[in-house]
Image (tube, rainbow, N blue to C red; front, side, top):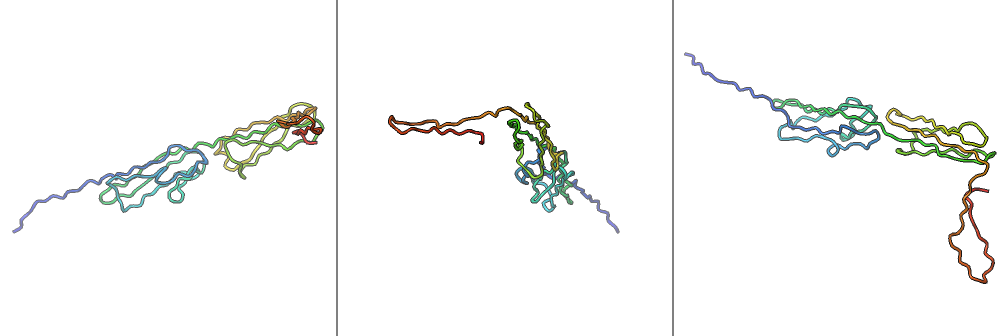
Amino acid sequence: KLTYVKNYLNVLKKLDQNVVFTAPANATYKDADLVWGSDWGVSFGDDYNSEAVLSVVSSNENVAKIGENNALVITGAGKTVLTATLEGNYMYNDWESKVTLTVAKKAFSITANDVSKKIGNEDPVLTYTLEGIEETDDLVVTLVREEGEALGEYDINVTYTMENAESYSITVNKGTFTIIDKLPQTITAPEKIELTYGDEAYTLEAVSDLEG
């Protein structure tokens, strides 16, 4: 004789993992690397697969890449999607979170410095000033003034080449090269001279900012 015993099989629904991914939405090219665990990272709640290995990837390594110890390294201007994943198991669903990071261009300027010379003299060396960036081997600046040797003002034109220039917002400012009949001169004398009646004759020494 067979006896049938009715029973039930309970199938439990998997739980979502309690993980929060925090990453920046904005940065600027040449920013310092972002440190995992302080500048960006994940936090875990009570429910997650502790045996799984967290994975973080960047969709565009020309904008940002994952470096040593999960540091976020900014490599160029543009957009990338940062994706963090954690595999599930028999109890938990797979977890995934995405953040879109927009990296702005690094802004700086190149300004040709104004300069003068006396008519008939050799041209002085042309120089420039950088603002917003330090001097770097990646940047090559060329300064050329307009031709002419008559009295008057001439533009100092600026051209440049630079690696990864598309990740910079570069402002170029011309300078002015002036040819004059006489150079301005500044004479600097001692601020204070103390003499006593009867002293020997004193020769006043002053210094000019012009050579010769």
